[in-house]
Length: 337
Ligand code: 3EB
Image: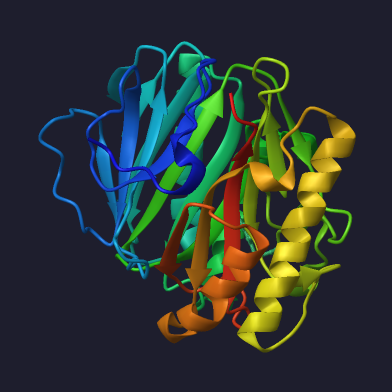
């Protein structure tokens, strides 16, 4: 039997994707698994499920280790196209691809990979990329005079704009953190149901960051609200850090964590202004915390747990895209079914 953590057992039943953190890959009753993601390669490939199972090398700092499971109450079909391994229902698709980092600019690798994603979504007719995770190897290293993260932003920007993302309002929610394996790895969610993006009133939109952060601004939305049946919207909050306006604030990791949580709360409130039936702060379903230093776990975890009691949480060791940032947090919110 799967063991659910916190309030993750409140399973939705409206065709939405559902994420849960489990200790066993057995599909819950009535659910179809699209994908499982194993952070830190702790789980063996599940023998009892033929759903794609991906490893992200970043070490999990929580115990017990948890498996991220994406499921639906709708039937799932699976395939491979353009080098992307995907699983889909009638309304949603999850996909994964990775590419070794060849010598030369990371921008080119990022651009090619994202073009493969966008082409796949066009071919399979999922109009809206809603959430994307990017694991960038050596994210703070400099090559050709640019940090790997800034290179990634250049390639991403080019891929999006060349494929017709004319308005920033179409960007997905995103995370871009340092990967611990040598490949650039991308996992994404898309849908053919309506989505809307949400920007943070406390922060300059990332796609409007000034040039001091890199020659191309980061192409992502602070959050995406995915429509379901009324009252069952899901809010996907991007990786969020201690950034106010466009500047990093605070050195100390506890203060950075508190500022990050204030940013996340502001996003939930902003989504509520855009759509009154969107999830409230307490409706958190899954959190992921990225820590540059594993030793900061004792400091960070209680601060997150007191802001969001009982929230299912995976904590990963990962470099953050700005050197001064020590913590980044993301999450999925939805009202109980
Ligand atoms: C920030 O607010 C922190 O480039 O995809 C967070 C989430 C960050 C996603 C991305 C970057 C990205 O700018 C960094």
